[in-house]
Each structure stands twice: as C-alpha cells, then as structure tokens.
Amino acid sequence: MMFRKIFLFVFSILISVSCHTATENKIPVVGFLDLLQDETLANAKKGFFVALKEHGFSPADKTLEIIYRNAQNDQPVLLQSCDYMISKNVDLIASNPTLSTITAVQKTKTIPVFMMVSPRPDLAKLTDANGKAPANLFGVYETLEYIDTSVMLIRQVFPSIKKIGTIFNQSEPQSVDALQRIEMTCKSFGIELEKLPVNNSSETQLVVEALLNKKIEAFFALPDNTVFSSMELIVRSCDRAGIPVFTSEEGLVKRGAIAAFGADMYAWGHQAGEQAAQFLATKSTSGLKPEIVQVRRRVYNPEKAGKFGATFGSGFIAVQ
Image (cartoon, rainbow, N blue to C red; front, side, top):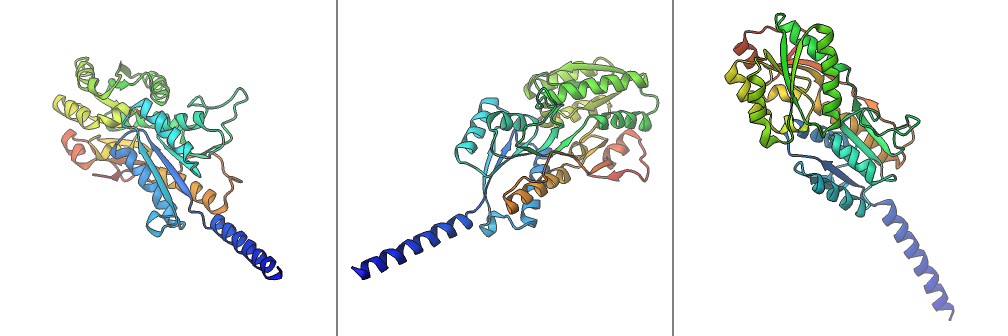
C-alpha cells in the first residue's frame, strides 16, 4: 500500500513536470494572411520572416510554425483563410496588405494582428467612434502624406507636365483614399488629373488604353492591389505610348516605373516582424502599438530614365 502511494505520488510529479515542460516548449504558430501573389508584396513578407529569424524564430530551426495562406485576390478565399487560422488558434496573424488587415481585425478581437503594407487604422476605417484602433491591432502603417511628395516628383523630373492619369479600384479603401489625396495635390499644383475606375486585373488593359487616349503625359500607379497585379501590363501599354509611369511604391520601380518616393517594402515587413518577434519572445503586447513606417526612399529605374531622357540627382537611389 505504501509502495502504491509512493508510485502515484512520483507519477503525478512526472506528469506535472511533463505538462509544464510541454507548455514551456510549445512552438509558436504564426499565421500569414496574404491577399494575392505579387512581387512587390512578397518583399514585405520576406522582410517580416527575416526579422523573426533574426530574433530566433525560424521553421528551419523548429522554433516557429507558419500557416501561410494566399487568397489569390479572392475575397471569399481571404475570409476562409482567416477563419482557418483562427480555428488553429495561431499565436498571431500577420496581414499583408490592407484588405488582409481589415479582414483579420474584423474576424478576431483576441489574436494579435501585425499589419504591413496597410494605411493608418483611421484611414482604413478601423477606428471606433472615439478614434481608437482595435486593441489587438499592431504592426506598421503608412499615411497619405507621401502622395504629395510623389506628385512633386513628377514635376521635378518633367516640369512641363500638365496632365497625369491614374486608375483605381473603387472597392479598395486605400486606393480611394490615395485617389482623393492625389486629386487634392494635383489641384494645388495646377495639374489636371484623369482617372478611371477598374474592378479587376482583367479590365486593366482596356482601362489603361482608354486613359492613354485622353492624352495624359504621365501615369501614376496608386497603392492599389489591382495595379500591383497588373503592373507589367500597365508599363507595356505606357511604354508603347511613350508615357512614363511614376508611383509611390519602390517595388513597382523594379517592375518598370521610372521613379518613386515611398516606403521600402522589405523594410516595411521587417519593421512589422520586429514587433511580432517582441510579442513572441515576451508573450505580451505591452509597449506595442501600430507605428508609422520608418524607411522611405527616392528611387529610380536607370533603364527607364534613359528611355525617357530623365536625370536624377544624388538624392535618388538606382534600383533595377
């Protein structure tokens, strides 16, 4: 009888220690919610996971599990992907870009969401009546002030330009907000803006051709997912018409735009990853909050600069 009591006592201690160790050694699970397959957005994703690895969280080392879903720009798939991550009780959701962020914070109020390539929460219509962002929203955002500098960039490179054109997706909040900002900026600079709506990438070529028929002198690629997925097509059409493409996204310069002032996508994702790594290390969101993107640069494409006879000073970085 005494032996049985001792055995049960030792067994209970072993079970307790085992459970405690298993809890302590639980590998964190990160859900990465991507809206679409896109080279520009992929740079942000890369930066995010590099930051995690730098802080000791990597699938290769078995210190991190990743659940990755790409919605391929399909809203129902995006919703299902987010639901799946929530059902798996991931430790955090990384959202890239805006629509992924909006979906994540609408779907969960408890799992921390670390955004990237997304606007400030109020611009994304994610704040409450008191102007407060969701308590579980963290990561890195952008404001619209960069649009002003981007338009000034066009005038700086081609001072005689009087008319620029752009396309926008009416269903994307960040695209509509950016459009409103560029309209205001163009008006202040005395530049005429031609704009046409586009609903999806299958319409892009026809819409861009219609815009070119309006005799625009430059095209501005807004931060729009339809633009991201159609960039090569846009550039080809504009190149044929002899129209330079400007943008606010560095990644789009590598894909054929002539110049940009805007956030470095890799650095944007890395900055969000730094926050996520802090959360995984401490298991606490204390001290974390949404913050503005830190790295913006003026960049240009040397090949396109040569094609359009443009020169760029020492304040610009060549990318190709």
